[in-house]
Amino acid sequence: KEIEVDNEMHRKHYAITGVGQRSKVTCNTNTNHTLEADVPKKMGGGDEAPQPVEHLLAALVGCTQATAVYVGRMMKPRLIIEKIDFNIEAYRDEGGALSLPITELPTIPARLQSVSGSVAVHFKNGVEVSEEQLRIL
Image 1 (cartoon, rainbow, N blue to C red):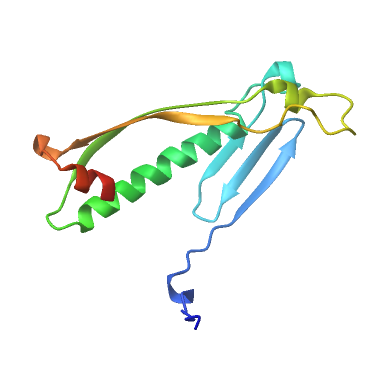
Image 2 (tube, rainbow, N blue to C red):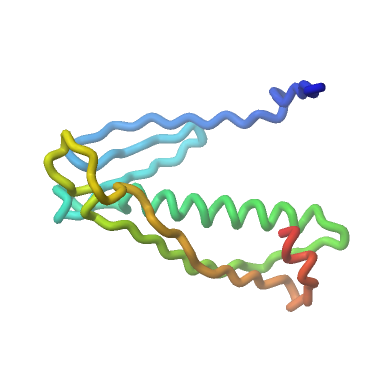
């Protein structure tokens, strides 16, 4: 039997509007922040802002940071995170995104092919944590 849960009261709403001119887009969020994205000159852009894929990786880092800090605060005993160092890399073959003619599917995927990296968590006052506590974070 499937259980129905009313999560509407916990639902967070996100909204973004954007205006693009040439290769650059400026977006405004419903939380009063502005994001810009552009592509490198070799892809026809102006290279005036981070690429969309860089925003994607920054979102991964930001969500990981926010979640870890929240979970650490809610644990018993509390784990207060002083900082987290991220070193994230991704790659894709540009041949997929730049493949011509545009009307044919590229033989190389036009997407990220790998995302990897490392994360170092530093706790307040140098507190030592167990492997189990790190797994929960």
